[in-house]
Amino acid sequence: MIHPESKDRETISFGDASRDIWDIVVVGAGVSGSIAAREAARLGSKVLLVEKATLPRRKVCGCFLNANAVASLAQLDLTPLLVASGAPAVRGVFVAAGRHQAYLPLPTGAALSRYWLDEHLSLEAMAAGASLLLRTEAHLAGVDSDCCRLRLTRGDEEAEIRSRIVVAADGLAGRLARETKGCQQFINPHSRVGVSAATSLVPEAYQPGTIQMVVGREGYIGSLQVEDGRVEIAAALDPVAMKRFGPGETVRRILHQSPLPRFEDVGELTWQGTMPLSCRTSPPAGERIFFVGDAAGYIEPFTGEGMAWAIASGAAVAVTAHEAARHYTPDLPRRWIAKREHLLRGRMRLCRLVTQSLRHQRLTELNVALLGRLPFLAAPVIRWLNRPRPNPSGPRR
Ligand SMILES: Cc1cc2nc3c(=O)[nH]c(=O)nc-3n(C[C@H](O)[C@H](O)[C@H](O)COP(=O)(O)OP(=O)(O)OC[C@H]3O[C@@H](n4cnc5c(N)ncnc54)[C@H](O)[C@@H]3O)c2cc1C
View 1: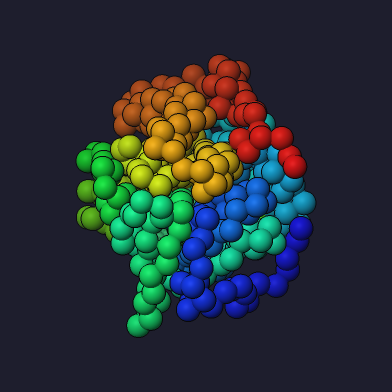
View 2: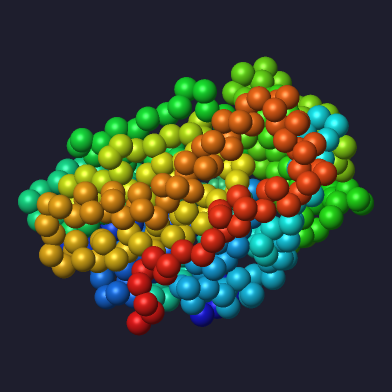
């Protein structure tokens, strides 16, 4: 279902949200949260989706929906949404390291800004029956025998709400992991940090439908032209270089080492940043709370899979949360952990391996030189990463 207009579209007032006991409260209306809310509502749960920002909003992301993400959206009957967005098809990636470059064909994905995608996924959640609160921050206040208590704040307003189950989809910088008894958030101290900006000054030689990646000593950068014609530039940068030069200058330095088309205005763009990119919540579930998407764990964006993981795990957690809201048993957190591992572990391991090897500039240059001559060598890995998953929320009702 398509929803063109979306201003001021909350379905419930801040005060009314605290009157009911919810089956499921989903914290965070990014990709994983909106998918989880939509799927749980479609199963029949009474769902509240809480987002601290307004929507639409920009978000640090390379905006590449890989073939896997596109297939998962299709399994969830969301292909019409993708078609309506006008997202250009993406069929390949140019990778440059040092003076070497390679073009690798990819199974067809799409280039869609998070400004468009996140807003429309939240509208899909509402169309399925979920209620939405924007500009509202949620914090875990406590867990009772039959429900969780969440504290909601919006400006000076404050309310406490109750929910049988909480789905924590609050992203990399989310705080729910630290607020959950028995859960800890681990951050890789050598992790890079994410930045992104959009430009409408597109170089003439820029090729739409192709991701342009540049790997340098101070990090790597991906750029992609999205549905509104702008190019989204996203990067994972060495925090030391970032501190020294700032995001725009670090990106410019890396780009200028490469033979790919240059963006003349990188220094003047408005850059948004993230906290360190490699982190995980352990365990990714607690009593009556399940973690999903980046809130459960994230590695680095090089293989362009974060949204595919978020969509698949968002749909999968909806089934577990729906069951838990109906009849909670203490083994459910463990079952969610096992389900998530089954869904993502192999892909995350490969992503970790790739991102670790990118730290060795000489090795990366040799690999790119090799792939420049023999691009088919990358095909098995690309195929494996994009292999379709079984529908994570089960057969469609
Ligand atoms: C530089 C970079 C480039 C990337 N490029 C790609 C790419 O090209 N392709 C790809 O697939 N993935 C990419 N990713 C990864 C992708 O962006 C993430 O994996 C994805 O956004 C995860 O979605 P999520 O829903 O789990 O979290 P998020 O999208 O981060 O959503 C979390 C939401 O929770 C909200 N929130 C947080 N705390 C609270 C609170 N207390 N109360 C209420 N709301 C709260 C936030 O405002 C936010 O809207 C990239 C990431 C980075 C950093």
